[in-house]
Length: 504
Ligand code: HEM
Image 1 (tube, helix red, strand yellow):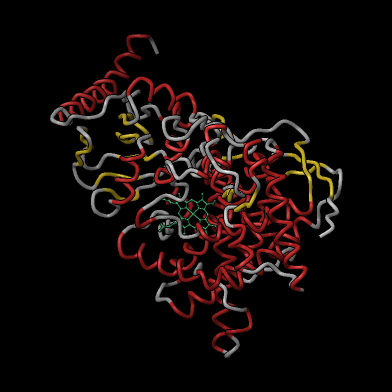
Image 2 (spheres, rainbow, N blue to C red):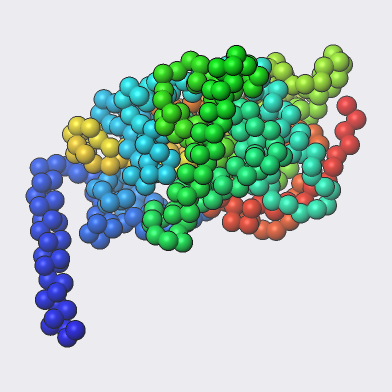
């Protein structure tokens, strides 16, 4: 093809793009849009936005855009005109106005893989029904009893398998723990059994696709994930049929009251909806908390004073338990360690905390060292959420037109130096001050706030309890958490452990 022929061939497409661009500009001329750059037609700035960066930063793209345009800017992302918000006030406003001014709106590819009935993509009444089921399943009563007990059992199962001086992936171990726990609670599946291991294997392939580019072509991670999705769904379907069979024979209580049993007994959902609910809870409940646990292991390793303080606290709990003759952790123990609350003396306080508190008196100081909060603030397991404007919205002088995508970037608020001192430092002691806690939203906010936040915090606390009591650990190789934008340790966070022999 000659150059002229090529130009003639491409001309109609170029003219159409130009026309769309002009119409788009005219349509939005009446709005006072935030400043920003719409990038290339159709692609916009999506690739630059998704470029991996250190998870404890906001990345180059965000940094440059905030510097240039401020904390609220427009862009073109995921195939749609978008307003990106790194502004704490706007983020809260968006999340609290769910269903009124904004609505959850994940890219179609996420719905394709998690399923059209997945809680993460549903809106309206069906979302409310699914949410009620999930909240019932993750109720405080269940957390206090069954879940706490199982959590401790699964933690010890993982930790007791660690061999001294061997090198292994802490991230994989955390995944093993959270997967086994969810598989048990969702479908009464026991760790180590062939069917559980098979499901775990499929799940790994599935996860790779959830976080990959949505290209449904032979050989792509997305295509493989879609295949794994149908294998997993067949598997769940089989479990469901077995369970229905048992219920008919009056044996429904044999499997304990897991989510599958609960949904079959108490909800009006039908087959496909149950399958997507179970798959999305397995996804939401497994991936996030395992990353959070890996992040805690990573941050703590570099902060010996925090480990020391945690160990003292947890030893105190363990000693009290020994004296009372109890073995298993209970809810009162958890309350004592919620966000690892520490009672430490002033000498330690001054040695490791900012001198700006030097006006404190000589009494023992109660420090609430919130290791879990700090891990979630700095690591930002979920970095941003997907929403769209249901109406034309006016916020602080800017317009957000109806139908535009809106991305509240919670990570950008957590790493904002005007809200958190030295935001890139892991400093659990910062949580002594109540400042900025209203800007802290690791679990989202409003009517769609994470349904498993209490479960996630409990998992982290129980895992950390046994970890600091039983092991000392170090990184066996340099690794660092990256945002892809899902958070991951590229080398799997390799660690080496030494067993501790605490005399409680
Ligand atoms: C550290 C761990 C976790 C983090 C950081 C986290 C974060 C989040 C965030 C930010 C959302 C809001 C999504 C949105 O508004 O679009 C969410 C939703 C959700 N999370 Fe979590 N999550 C964690 C653990 C869990 C666990 C253990 C479960 C248990 C199954 C869970 C279940 C859910 C569910 C069901 C939703 C959807 C809620 C709804 O749409 O109403 N999450 N999570």
